[in-house]
Image (cartoon, rainbow, N blue to C red):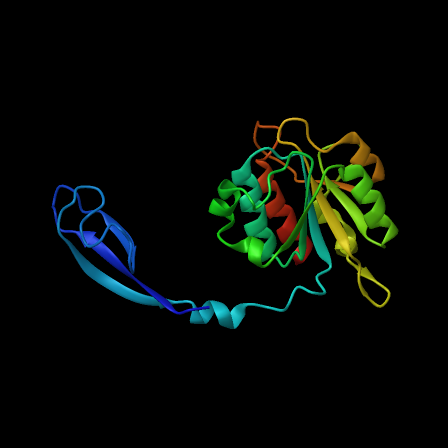
Length: 217
């Protein structure tokens, strides 16, 4: 990636004092974005090189994929794609009414991740999963349902098989109705994220992020 730099600036207006980052070419310029007052640089930093050094691997042989079924929010889909890239998921199956990166709203939150995570659109997720199982993929559904187990208690993530790692596709479903019962019936395993608060579910993009972290460890 190209090396970029940014500045940390502080507004000199004593009634404001905003501290903010400024990247090259940003429309804020050197004026405070809050009060339009004069600002001064307190720090400059290059970014990019250290990130390139810790990036790992190509994804042609990625053994993790996500299936996003009937998720309505383009922003959630974009966030899922960005997270999928970060945790090394090789493909995103976008099903039903799930918007695709062809929509600007998805690209706004994916921040280009759709260029690194393969994606495809499918009208019927059940038919797709039947096909994936025939190709040797194991299917996990992320849902709090009868028989589900906490994802962190899946022994060794069941992510190894003879000759290498087991290929797993993780299903996340509708923000309102959850994972399609037809998909739950096909799943090899149903997993969930334990919750300690009063709400019954996480945002779907947040839930995928937590599950992806657990699976990629």
